[in-house]
Image 1: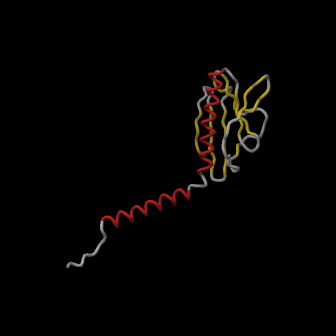
Image 2: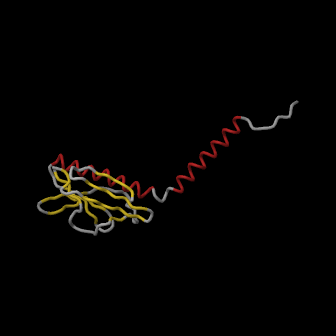
Length: 144
């Protein structure tokens, strides 16, 4: 009987599988602080595009404003701004806008596009993201 040394292919595959799982879990754990902010910004960007489309195709005037703790979408009804219910799930408390809270929207969507070009900055402890809306209604995002 020969005395063999080494590992079988199955043993090596199991070790590689465990190492891969541990790497994936550690990366997810290290990135968990940024994930809620990025997800909130993605949801807001999608909802903003949807509001722009609703204004364009519905012939309405809609806007985005900051209420001091979270963004709100509004719609112009009878010369007043009415809040539109859009669920942002859990808005991270650390994610803030760079403009003050106001009853007037910072960004206004019209049937012909964005009323005026606007730059919006979003701040959180680990970073900043700039949104630039062109008058044609295109959103360009860039980290700062």
